[in-house]
Image (cartoon, rainbow, N blue to C red; front, side, top):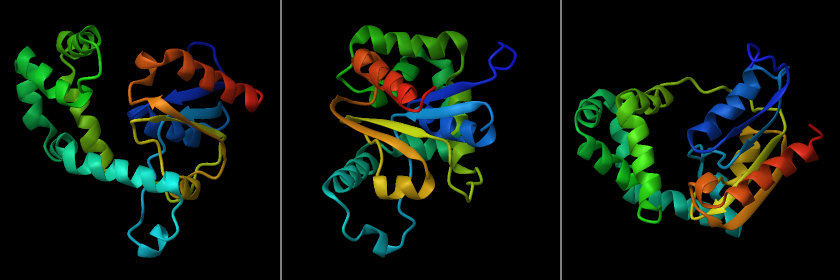
Length: 208
């Protein structure tokens, strides 16, 4: 951003970007004015007392997490432990890459979006290198202190967006927590108008 001539800017993220953007704010607070995300990945520490008296929305998010863990988490385990194993396969076969990504993209997305997504990995040969994100994340050292920059969350129905009790433990300056009934995980594709409006409203609210 400095090379582009920007000294002050905001960070916006979805999925992995929801993990990266708060860290960008932690690393460069003199430049990042605020962070807008669609998920805050803060989880229980293992202390049973943390789960007592969770509100209805937090309970619903725990159920979303449980479903994902039981039905969709295999890709995460494999790429966090042995990213190169799957990397050889998805870099060698476009059908293999399509099958691997289609299980994650789901059936609610239109075929053009799915094929475009797959082709971006195939033509650039970045399926294997992208898988290493999960390995690096699984082996990273977690910061002990919470973030302090302004954070805005836009949570969308059909996707995990965060358990507020734990999010507030890890992020001390959550200034906006909006929930929408629809949109799912790929909000920039499925409800771009709602998503962009929320991003704009967040930065307007913090006066940036």
